[in-house]
Length: 375
Image 1 (cartoon, rainbow, N blue to C red):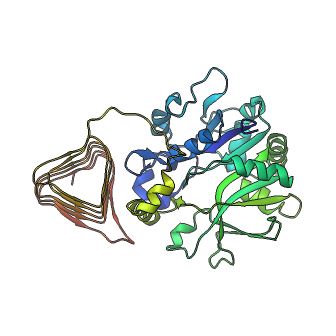
Image 2 (tube, rainbow, N blue to C red):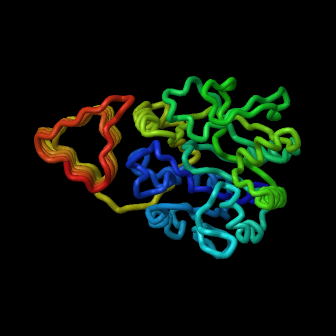
Image 3 (tube, rainbow, N blue to C red):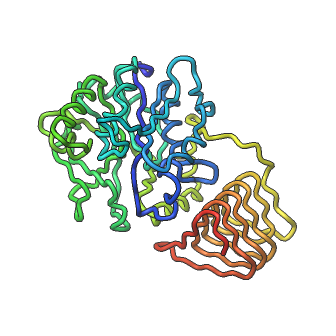
C-alpha cells in the first residue's frame, strides 16, 4: 500500500523574506543543518515511506537545486522504472514558462501525473522541514474516505509578521474534518498550521486542476481548498515533532540555532528515518592546538584555529587563529581570518571575512552576507 503513491514536490515558492539566501537559489536549495539542503528532508521523508516515484516541479533559480539532486542516486531514486523526475518550466502556446500559481505548475506537469501508475499523490512544498513517514497518513486518508488529507502541526505565537508567508490555519471538528480555514490571518483564531503537505487521489487532482484552469484560477490553497471547503472532504493529520518553516531570515536563523539542542537533533535526525543528502568526500574537521569549540555543529572539512561558540559550520569552513565566532551560521568554504569577530551573522557560501573585521547582529535581526562576498 505504501508504494501506491507518488511524490510531487513544488519548489517554486518565492519568499523574498529570506533575502540573500534565495538571491541565486530556490528555497528548496537553501542550506540547512551543516550538511543538508531544505529539499533533502522532503525527499528523505518520501523515500523512507517507500515512495519510489518523485517529481520535482522547478520554477526559478533551480540550477543549484538540479546540481544538488543530480540523478537522485543519494536518495535511491536512480531507477529503471519510476525514480526522480525534475520538471522545469517550458514554453508552449498554453504555457509561458512563468507559473501564476501552484495549479498552473500542476497543469504544466500533467503529463507526468497521468503517466504515474500510482493511485495517490503526496503533494508537498519545499520550505517546511520535518522528519516523518507518510505510512500512517496514507492509511488514515484511505480509512476516512477523505478527498484531501492535510498534514498540520500545532504552534504558538508567530514571532515575526514576515513569518506569515503562506500561513494556512485550520479548525477541525471531532472527526478531524476541516470546518474553517484562515490564510495569512493577522490575528488568527487557530494555532493548527498547515505543513504544506497533502494527500489526494490522482484522478481527483487531475479533475480539480482542469476545473481551476478553465475558470482562470491558479492557486491550490485559495482556489481549491478554501473555495471548496464545504464540498470536499478535507481531513487533517496531526504531526507533533519538530517543524521548521523557512518563512523568513529570522525563522531560518532561529530554527538553525535550535539544532544545537539535543532533543531537536534527535527528533529531526532520527536513527530510524535517516536524512539523505549529496555525498561529498571530505576529510574530518581539524581542531588546531589553540582552537576552542563550544556547543557547535561542525561539518567535515572544517579547520578550526580560533574560537567558536553556539555555531553551525558547513563543509570546508576555516576559522583562523584569534578569530571569535559566536551564534553564527557559516556556510560552505567560507573563511574568517585572524582576529575577526562575528556575532549573530549568517555567511553564505565562499564568503571571506578579512582580518580584524567585526560584525554584530541580533537574534531577531541577524546580519546576512551574500555568496562570494569579501568583507
